[in-house]
Structure formats: structure tokens, C-alpha cells
Amino acid sequence: MRKGTTLIELLVALAIVGILAAIALPSGAALLGGVLTDRAAHQLMAAHRVARFTAIMRGRLTRLEITPDSLVVRLAGGGPDSAVVWRAAGPAADGVELTGPAYALVFTPVGLPYGLGNGTYTFTRGSARCSVVISRLGRLRLIRG
Image 1: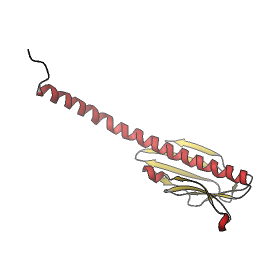
Image 2: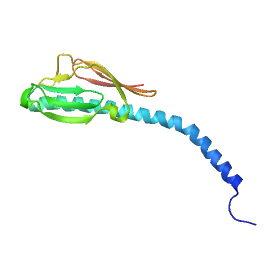
Image 3: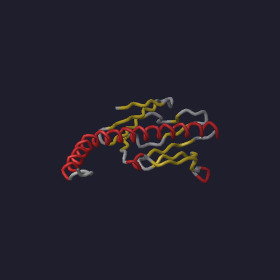
Image 4: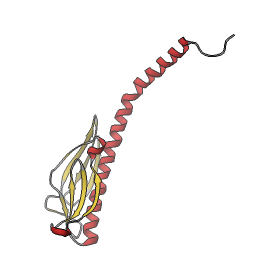
């Protein structure tokens, strides 16, 4: 009696592994899309909090600039004092599409939004979707699905 496996046994094992991979890969891609959109939404929420707390702590107007490529918090007012306080990569870095208002959010020294402070930002990747709703008073709500 010989020890080892035959070519037919190896081909059957490879066929089974191929079938299982074909079943698992689409659900894995959907899971990855969900994780990346959720991450992008949480990153936007973190940027919103940083901008708000920066306005409170420094006692000045602070801007949150939201683009697909970057999230930037800077001191408002123009000139040399408009330094970047915080920066992070936008959702496009993870292949997530961002739709929402094109204006920057401005926070007053007491932490309230100034001007147009409300909006809904939607993050999509494949079939995964996640939205962040910002109320007029600056409250955040995360909506999955």
C-alpha cells in the first residue's frame, strides 16, 4: 500500500475549495464595504467633534471642511491665524463615495454651528450605505443601511 494522495483526490479537494471561495467572496466584499462606510462615517463624526471642541477651547470660530479627499479643521478668520488644527484623509482614500452639502461647517466659540450647520452626508461603497445627519444644533445621528 502506498502513502500519499492521488491526483484525483487533489483535484477534488481544489474543486471544493474553489466552490467554497466562490460562495464566500461576495459576502466578504459586502462586509468590507459595510466596514469601510461605517469607518468613514465615524471619521466624519470625529472631525465634527474636533472642530466643535477646538472652537470652545480656543474661543474662536472654527471651520470644518469636508471633501471626498480630506477632512480639515482650521481656525476661521483668514490671514495667518487660519492655521490647520487637524487633518485626516477623506473617505475617497478607502474607495468610499461621499455625497452631501458642499459648504464648510463653522462653529462659534460656544460650540454651536454658525450659518448653515445642518446637513446629511451619505457614504456608499458598492451596496453598503451609511449616513451622518447633522442637526441645526450640531447633534450627530448615524444611520446605517
